[in-house]
Length: 154
Image (cartoon, rainbow, N blue to C red):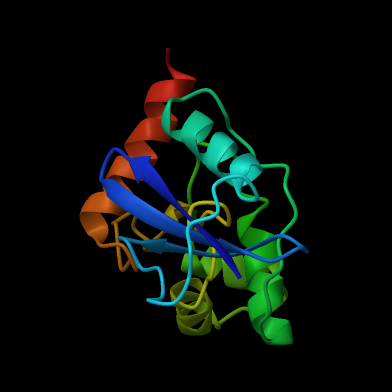
C-alpha cells in the first residue's frame, strides 16, 4: 500500500493506493506506523483532489481498487452518477438501483464507502433535503457541497 497526505480546506486527508488504483481516502492523517509517504506514486490522486478543492475539477478519471458486497458496489456506482453540484436522497439512490425501500441500507453503504469525495457520498441527503450522516462529519459534508455549488456559479 502506498500512502499520501493531501491538504484540504478542512484539514488533511490520507490516501492509500495499490498498483491497481486508489484504495482508500480517510479524513485526517492516518498512515500506519510502518508505512512511508509515497507522493510520487500517488501523484495523480493528489493532483486531481487538489484540483477538486480548488474548484478546477468536477470529475475524477483515475482507477479505483475498492472492494465491497454486490449491493455496496451497486450503491457506489449509483453515487458516481450524481452530477457534480447536485444531490439525491437515500431513497432516490435505492430506487435507482432497483431496491426501493432500501434507503437505510444505502446509508450503510455510504458509511462504508472507502473513497469518500471520489465516490461522492456527500451528495446524498435526507428525503427532505436535510444533511444527514457523513463519515467526515456534517461540517465537512456541508463544505464539500459548498465547494461544488460555488464552482458551478463562478
